[in-house]
Amino acid sequence: MEVREVTCRYGGSGDEGGVTAVDDVSLSVPDGQFLIVAGANGSGKTTLVRTFNGLVDPDAGRVAVNGTPVETDLVAARTAVGMVFQDPRDQFVAATVGADVAFGPENLGLSHAEIDRRVEAALDAVNMAGRETDRIASLSGGERERVAIAGALAMEPDHLVLDEPFTGLDEPARRSVVERLRALRREGTGVVVVTHDLRDVFGVADRVVGLADGRVAIDAPPAEAAAALPGLDVRVPEGDPAEPRPSDG
Image 1: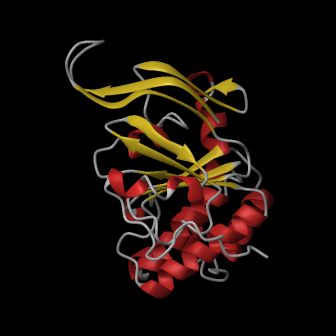
Image 2: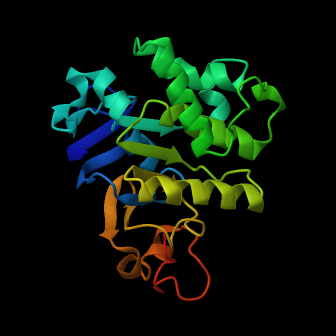
């Protein structure tokens, strides 16, 4: 993913008035990287990542995925960049687990056999195999988060973007989601976690991009970013966050 001089505004018209949520941001996200996009509420992090697959259209600048500008092929962008919203309920479109996970592949016009394969693989990846007929309304918060991840994985994206994925989850559910993200990273899927609380994923990440007032304030490996992060009003691990991260093996 390539982001070049992207600016996003809300309200106003053209270059006049309104609120600037993202201000002249440029960054490159290589395939397979585990990236944290950190910042306080209102720092622009959600708006920024939603430009990655065209959910937000920048007022200025350019976003490209696999070399193709997002606006020229939204289907390709949304296939390559899977998005999991802060509240999974905002993206569920079906009553049951299997039907919801199948929704994206169905819209790609895939064969029934291929759709079934993707649904089975995606649910297996999040430890929800065999739960296709479960009603989403009956699931716990952690299970809903995992189904939302499965729905994105069924599109077989190059990058998976998760917006505050740990909000409202208890400790076992948080650990389960982190382990799924570790596994995805090992398998070559790029992972982007948007958060103001880095404690769950700091030890897994390759890189931290910190935003303040819509601009990039930090772009560094976790050990180098650690000292500056508290100044962005985010939560970091206690102790020495610069210690080597746990093995993914």
